[in-house]
Amino acid sequence: MHNILNNRPNMQYRRFGKTEKFISVITLGGMRFKLGWDEPRHDIPKETLEECLNSVQLAFDAGINHIETAWGYKKSETVYGKVLNEELKIPRDSYNLMTKGNPMTGNETRELVEKQLNDLQTDYFDFYGWHGLNNQELFEQSCQSGGAVEELLKLKEEGVIRHVGFSTHAPLEVIIRAIESGLFEFVNLHYYYFDQRNLAAVNMAQVNDMGVFIISPNDKGGRLFNAPEKVRNVTAPLTPIQWNARFCLQNPGVHTLSFGMHQPQHIEEMKGIFPVEIPWSKNEQESKLLLDSFANEDPYGTYEGYDLYNDPSGINIPQVLRLRKLWKCYDMKEYAKYRYKIFEQKSHWFPGMLPTAENLAKIDTSKIPPNIPLKKLLAETHKELSVPEYKLAVD
Image (cartoon, rainbow, N blue to C red):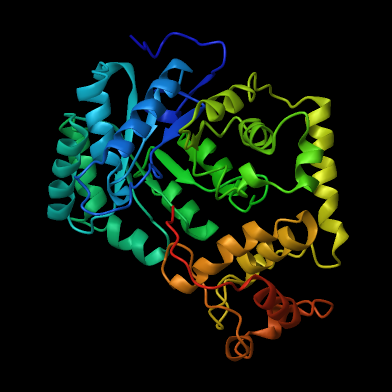
């Protein structure tokens, strides 16, 4: 039943780096089941169970052999455990399972992993990622002697965890340091057409033969299920979701993309991604060139400001400029608002102070090209994208 070695007509598989596991290029993500973020975490409502059950059945029937979840996704681990073991009774060796957590000490790590094994009703994890290695401080803390990553590697020696990796929202230089540390076998990161800043990290992971897992390409990658007509017209006959998936997968260093699929139409749209060919077809390349050209519609659309990441103002200048470009050049204002608001969380998941007048005054102007009215651009973006506060899950 659901043998992972059986090829399916609408699925492809890639070697997940040095782990030597062959996983489906689409992963079933478990972040957003109905009521999944409600407390208590172990109380599973009927509608949550049914949605997870349907998702797993549809995904496995489509050839997906990799499931991803995390302790931080509240009910997700528990409901997956019930579905896989109690409802469907899927043989454990017929699929790959990834979960994540971010404990800070060795003792906390072992305690958390035991809880996760219990919730997921398994005696081992194929992949375990330290969740949210989002800055240099967290990298150093998690990887210090006697720390969490060291304990994960001990659990690997014991066979409880087969492969250790990390997920990250960190600046590029921190991701590359973690990749080069030699401690990890895979990395979960953000890389899509509409956010290509981590291309160097993907390439470095490939050099180090690491598995590369792309986080949330359809939602964080631009809310592509609600893409504007300007984008949809260019990617046609592919949907934006299909086109972006092919964009990511045309890089052989990318191995799998996480899709949250809960309805039959989600699966059918996913099937339209295949076959993925390397190199791209002429039509796909022409679509990319046209999308690229849209950045020139704004005088400052190509200015990324990546060298201003650690500005003393605390403003996440590269990300604000990226959202400005998506608004100005791609008609993606609603997506830009959606992402812009989480700067106010002031956390390591999507850090950055808002460009208020007070913070704009703190900008170090020495690195700004004289032809770039940066403060004006940031102020304009803040005025247009700032919306009433709402709670947003991150990953």
